[in-house]
Length: 167
Image (tube, rainbow, N blue to C red; front, top):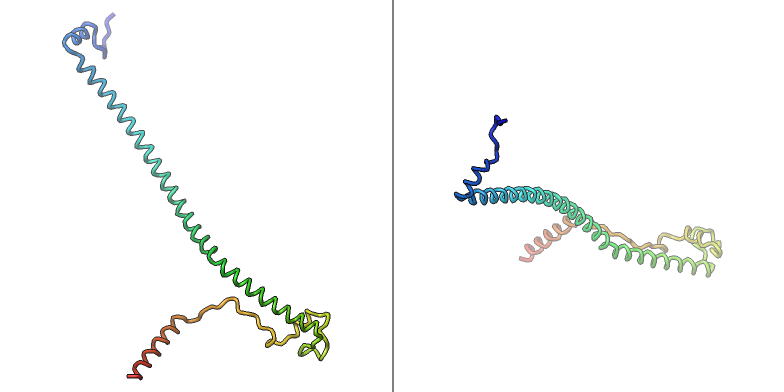
């Protein structure tokens, strides 16, 4: 039975003829071609992995940016703690001095203004409520400058006017 279609493999007689005539170059070419195909496949895989790595690095960069912003906020909060502690210390000192003056009034039996001459002994809370505004002065904890730019500009204009008057 003869096949109707020719084979893709060279026939045995043809292969022996090619071997005798120098078919080694075609087999080395085929080997080189196969090696180049393997190299191309390796490069495609490398390209995929490189693009995946680049995407992961971009995501990591975005996360690092978020951490940097959070770190800046944290640093801002931490830098303000010194002022917070100072305000607490001032407030505590004022409260201590207020308590000491109230205790002195209570222990001395001094009548607070507006109590009708009654003694404050035994009633510190009544002493705090009845004290004059002039007697109790709480220190200012926060000072907010108002119109600093306007005051600086006004000071500059005033200095310019004084310079003109001196001339």
